[in-house]
Image (cartoon, rainbow, N blue to C red; front, side):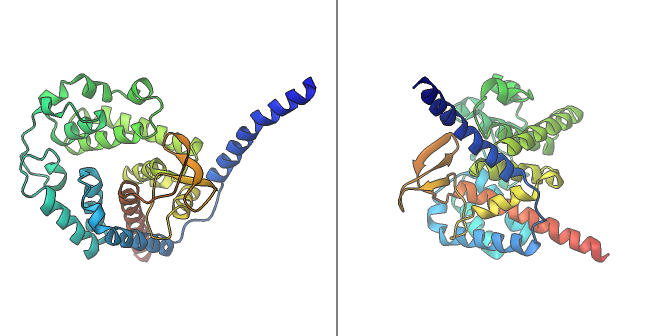
Length: 301
């Protein structure tokens, strides 16, 4: 009887471990390079999703996401992206001179910052605004000083899946504004990129933050270290409508109820496309398509 109990306990303990090992293997296996036409097709489908969900998307005043759409429109010169971005800008930015995110869209805009009025924002948003403005008063905030530390996420948000990518994005804003010692920031950038690469290796959940991690590596010049399988994984979870979400189905119990991964672990839910994940996917595919085009031109020369 005791042996049977021990056997059941052993199998119970080993099943999740075996499944995790399988996921790690699948996540990191070697495959051929993704063909540029596949990337272009994925990009077109994701833009179609954005246009099809235009009305709902424009109710979301998430500046960082629309900045990604703006960048994608500049990279691709796609009029659909430019049109919907301009609609967002006209609605939320142009007639609001006190919007703290104006510098994302109007680089030379003079934005008055009242740091005390920003305390309600998440710490990474404060770091983004500091990076964009290099505001001296905001820079004295303890939460800003701590985010300048490479180990901030380990010490402050050890279980937050997106902390490191947020920190790297804030750092990139600082680099663009020459807001800090260049050598120190370059060294920290390299350290954070290494952390993100390790996260992609050992966290195989194909959710929003997975796209975000690959995007940040590509956007910060480490795209050559992104595994082809990681890109294929992102392509595999793109929905039939062309978007991405923050839920990876593992088991479908019904049409509306699935068991799967999300940002905090495992839950019961349903795969649903979101602007948050899809905007990141659009920018990622735009950057990859541009890289492929640049490579093709170099080969022709």
